[in-house]
Length: 66
Image (tube, rainbow, N blue to C red; front, top):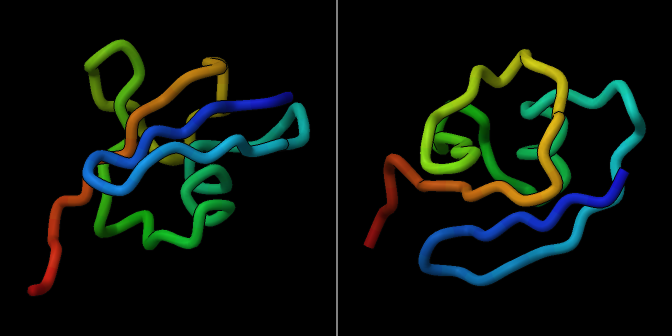
């Protein structure tokens, strides 16, 4: 399965996952901490233990240093 991940403020990544991957696996695939981001599908947050069922998601960083 191919998923486009838009990381708000950083850009997009195309990620290839196996069919049983969860949203936590997706977050790890783009080198982010699942506890520091929220995954949005169609503008709504999804649980990180839910299997990926979308081909386009947004990652919103909850904490960013600077």
